[in-house]
Length: 459
Image (cartoon, rainbow, N blue to C red):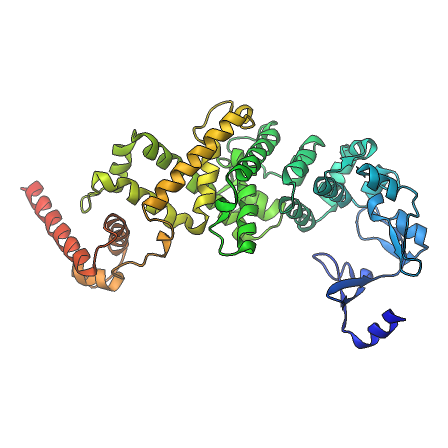
């Protein structure tokens, strides 16, 4: 009676599932808001699948037929609003729920062949609730035909959506361990052809090992790793991208040639095409990997000063010489200006792979190694904070391109002005309290000194 009345007075919407609404039009569902909760209204269904598609032919069915077509027994339970009781029409849903077991109402292999995406849904639910996958389900998920159908029959958008839900959930490591153990890693995270260097059979184990180490390390350090996010939502986003970065750390130096014969990171291919996630996600993860390599140099510099002269040589040129005691600040500042708010994430990833050793995957799970990583992360983060560099990417140049042209007395821009803009950033990092006038004076003196040196060399 209440539902009939509410149906008249409330807004009712229809929506479609999936990345292709036209394909899913037959699944049109009524949806409305009741006491702040969105409720979906669907009829009881019986479904039949074609061999070459996961889009079923839907017919009106009985309650039992509807329950049996569900992906998992724990998802086949009904709540009777008249009797206010749970109805288990498969006879297995409640028992599996009590046991913490993930299983299918019908034989697992036929269920997965009807809709291979159910393999990933089973994994996601098992990981989320720390449930056990039934043995026959694991056998079916590992079946070569099921794996082939998952790779060819299911759109990459749907695969990526399931993986993204796993990575954003409470137990992403458990989910990825299932994907690896069931032999699904290279199906889900499809690699491009003709890699440089070639992919190894053990990359699935290396990738998941790095994810697990990152997960344990992040929990040990705390949410401060993701404090570059301004609110809880953006912090969750930083955590998600951090976990993807950790997962693909072992393949960060692998590349392929795209259609334009451009050398592109394999990680970018996996994110953009295998998972069909946002292009900005791919760019951010690649940038995190690039910055993590630079952080490895910074860690060495901060811990031992061994590479001080090497780093100083990179920063110096004929117009600008960085004082030795400011090399660390300038070098760290340049790294942070590139990676911006994700600098703690890049530092975090760097601690996972520094120093790079042959048996890194074996040592990642050891507590003493994780403790060393934690100490290193905290030490470097503290050093960067003490150098007053957090937020340095917001630093505005004291002089714009036009002002630089005026100081240099040139009428047009070009590469010369670009190089001076880079020097200007270094100068400001070395002179955080410097003024515009002091900067202009330095530029004039540097230019005059360079001209004198060139004259002396020519004579």
